[in-house]
Length: 204
Image 1 (cartoon, one colour):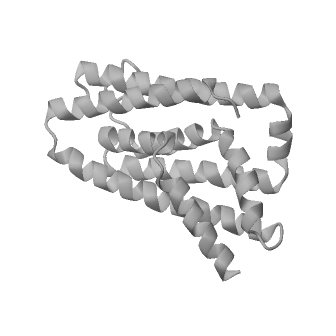
Image 2: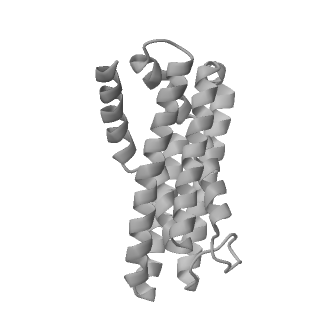
């Protein structure tokens, strides 16, 4: 059991530390809204993973993956949301503002904004559901409780890693000039757009 848990932590660490849409969104929100917003984004991502964990253990993921139209629709919705956030970040950078809730608002992102965005971004990526459904059973000695425990451990590790990202980025952000900050906002926006387009076009 100890060896299986250690192996799970190692595999999880590799997956979590590999940059993806959750990392890009956390960086973007830490830059535009500060440390609290970045950490809240990490919390939203972890919460989304917790939902997928429960759905996987309850068999909902199997139903989702069995229905190609539903799977595709959810993936497209998540892709559109990522592209929207990316374009919003690029638009804000061009105007010289530090973040926004909409294309026209200069209101800085709040912690609740970050939490919501992290949650919706993760829930809009059904490949996470497939990932949990395939990963967790490989390390669980039994069903049910073991699957949930491993899934929630993965969520906790994700939250810790992305929170570290958020704190670090927020500290570095305070040292940047206005032009450098806007350039990073635009860059993270482009990354989110690219990730959204990839999510929309890639196969399972």
